[in-house]
Length: 525
Ligand SMILES: *[C@@H]1O[C@H](CO)[C@@H](O)[C@H](O)[C@H]1NC(C)=O
Ligand SMILES: *[C@@H]1O[C@H](CO)[C@@H](O)[C@H](O)[C@H]1NC(C)=O
Image 1 (spheres, rainbow, N blue to C red):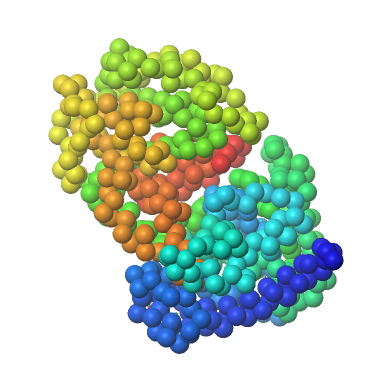
Image 2 (cartoon, protein in one colour):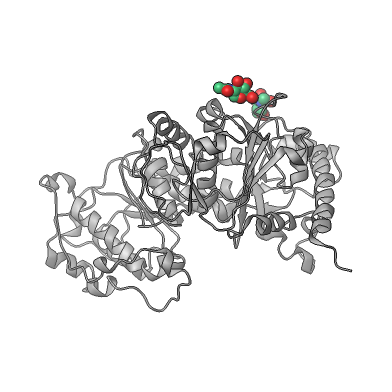
């Protein structure tokens, strides 16, 4: 007999509670600390606890802080929470919106973890999303990480290693500017029962804002704001949310850049604070990036690029995006003429300005048309002091030798003063035809794979309880952290990752002011 959905949820919920209690007593009992544990501490933990899977002695574990690590709620306190979905950057934008809402409404944020998975769970309407989040579980699968390397993977374990969840405290320092403005409780479990249990509230204490479409509402903090709804469907003024008195205010998705507006001067400042703190601070990531940056000559000594070509429309428009970035570099750091540029572009400029029709894109409508950009002829526009940018010796701080894939000529020799670091999802960037013209023009270009020997610590980071390594998720982050530390940064149009680097990582890592203006910019992931 099939269980009705409510029954099913109730059963799942019961499982959730048991699981949560187990987690609390096993995983978290000895961790009152959100910094990284030493292997030594872990071994001690393992000896105390036979259920922990066999540990990789070299692993650097992800630490899961207990719910009340940052804040212990009082009796009258009100709360706010939401459901996470999609990739890292959508979840980051959800967090930004949720922090603003929690602060505006003086509600404590029940902060969900970051879901990392491949493929990521897309947006779904509230009830579906809730169900999916609860069905996506590792309960009852404790045997999966116990399997030896030679044992076949049972079917129930096939998905086990393809996703995991990591607390935001792994990436960001929540303690300073964020905690000063928002009280945070870590929500390790997305079930309603967890809320009832942890906060000691009743079902009637939860007010749901269930969304039926992905951009169902936009929150206006300024009553007389004339900012258009854009892709959002309904306008909700802050006063409407303030009038809700229920203890817990539960949103579904809160994704979308500037979904929660910050238009009063006070709120704009708050957004600037949050953006300045939503910066990768994990010590292993930071140290790895710093080792590479030192070899590039140090902070502010090179040009950082973020070139995303991997999927969807980024693939279709890859050669156009690369060409846009290439011409900015040529303008700012060379004295090349139009004819010379044509030569270094291999006379492929017009071809590069076309979309690649070999790839099908499902969600074309999400992207703005770029007709104005097609068939753009070669132009050069150098600043008047361009000669200062040229030089035939690499900067003294650079500890690597410049090894261009094709030999320098008398012209390109003079561009060795410009060191370029490319963060990219392109496989084999040094030999990829898409990036060829950058390497052909600038002799001193570097990519992460040139620094493979610096990535050893990243490979060690693990959700040890699940034996899930995080390297593949962390590589693009470290890549971005390096590119962000140049004196200049150029990103890929329409990429939320590029705008995150441009707006937040680059200014913070190089001590420049963080950008919060630009409302109405439509950046897509
Ligand atoms: C967290 O751990 C570090 C290193 O193990 C230790 O120095 C620090 O005192 C701990 N903090 C708390 C709050 O336990
Ligand atoms: C905000 O909420 C906290 C916790 O409930 C409460 O102590 C405080 O007085 C509230 N602040 C304002 C301005 O209402």
